[in-house]
Amino acid sequence: MKRILCVSLLLFTACAVGPGYERPEMEVPERFRASVEPEAAASFADLAWWELFRDPVLRGLIASSLEGNLDLQIAVQRSEQARQQVGATRSALLPQIGYQGSARRSKYPINRLNESQQRFNSFLGALDFAWEIDLWGRIRRAGQAARAEMLASEAGQRGVLLSLVSQVATLYFQLLELDAELRIAEEARETFQETLDLFTRRYEAGVASKLEVSRAAAARAQAESWVPQILMAIVAVENQLSVLQGRIPGPIPRGAKLAEQHLPEIPPGLPSQLLERRPDIESAEQSLVAANAEIGVAVGNFLPRIGLSALWGGASHDLSDLTKGSSSIWNLAGEMAGPLFQGGFLLAQYKAQRAVWEEAKANYERTALIAFAEVSDTLTARQRLAEERRAQSVRSEQLQISVKLSLARYRQGLANYFEVLEAEQDLFPARLDLAQTRFEELVSVVDLYRALGGGWELGLQWQQESQQQAGSERPDPEEESSGSP
Image (cartoon, helix red, strand yellow):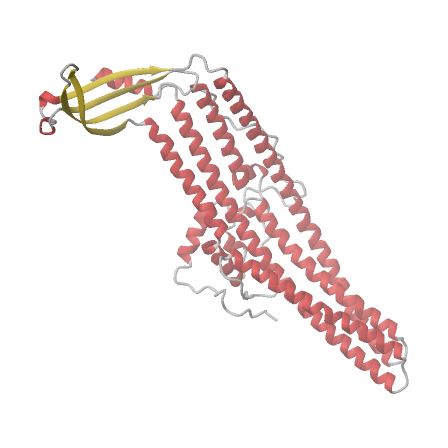
C-alpha cells in the first residue's frame, strides 16, 4: 500500500512538459510622458468610481447601468462559461467511473441436418473504471490553459465594466453640455430678438435703414435654427444612456450643471502599476499564459498515454443469478498508447501552437504600448484643455463686455448696426466653444481614469458600494429630467 501511495505521489508531482511561463520583459518608463505631477505610488486609478464622480444623479445612472446593462450581462455569462470549462478540463485528471448493463436473447443453430436450434439469454451488469495517469503533465497543462482563459475572460468582464462606467459618465457630461448649448441658443435667440426690436423701432422712426432690420432678422433666425438641432441631439444622447441601462429609451434626470461639475486632481501613479491594472493588458497576458500552456499540451501529444482500466460486475444467463458470486466478472488492465506515424500532424500542431504563442506575445506587448500612449494622450489633453478653457473663459467675458458697449454706443449714435451684430454674433459661438471645451475637459479626466485602468478592483468596489448604498435612495431614471427642455 505504501508503495502504491509513493508511486501515485511521484506521478502527480512529475514535471509537466512544455515551457514554464515567464512574463515578457518590457521597457517601462519611470514616469508617464506629459505627467507634471511628482511620482507617487498613489494613483488616480485607485479611486472607486463613486469617489471619482460626486454628482448623485450620475452615480445613480452608473449604478443602474451596472445592474441592467446587457453587454455586461453577456460578459458575465462568458466568464461563467470559461469558469465551467476549467472544471470540465480538470476533471480529466480524476478517474472516470461509469456503469453498463445489457439484456440479450440470441438464437443459434445446433444441428443443420435436423435444423434444431438453441435459444440463449444473457444478462450483464458492471461498473467500469478508467484513469489516464497524467505522467507528462499534458492534462495539467490543458487545465492551466483553461484557467488562463478564464482569467482572461474575467479581465474582459472588468474591461466591459470600466468601459461602461466611462461611457455613462461621458454621455452624461455630453447631456449637460447640450443643456448648456440649449440655454445659450435660447439666450441668443432672445438677444437677437431684442436687437431686432430695437432696429425695427429705429426703422419705423426713420432713423435706421431696412438693411439693419433684415440683418437682425437673419441673425435671429439663425439662432432659432440652433434650437431644434440641439433638441434632437439631447434625445439621441438620452436614448443612448437608456440603452446602456438596459431600459426603454426615455428622459434622463440631471444633477449639477456643466460648469458646476468638478473631478478630483490626483497623480496618475507609476507606469509599472499600469501593467497590473489595465483589464486589456491582463486579458492579453492571460491569453499568453494560455498559449504557453497549450505548447505543453502539444508536446504531451508526442508522448505515450498511460492509463488504468477496470471492470467489476456480473454476467449470467438468468437474471436472478446476476448478483451471485458464481456470476461475478472482473478485469484490471494497464494501458499505454502513443503515436508512431501520423504524417507530420503532431509536429505541425506543435509549430502552429508556437506561432499562436508568438502572436499572443506580440499582442501583449502591443496592448501595453498602446496603454502607455493612451495615458500620455489623456494627460496631455487634460493639461491643454484646462489652458484652453481658461483662455476661452476670458474671451467670453470680454465679448460680453463688447456687446454691452456696442449697444450703448449704438443707442448714442456713436456706432453702426454692424458693430452691434458683429459683437453679438461673436459672443454666442464663443460661449458654445467654452461649453464644448468644458465638456472635453471633463471627458479627458474620464478618459484618463479609463486609460489608467481605474477602479482596477471594480467588481469588489461595486460590491462594497452596493452594501453601503443598501436602503439608500437612488435617483429614479424614469423621473422626468429636471434639466430637460
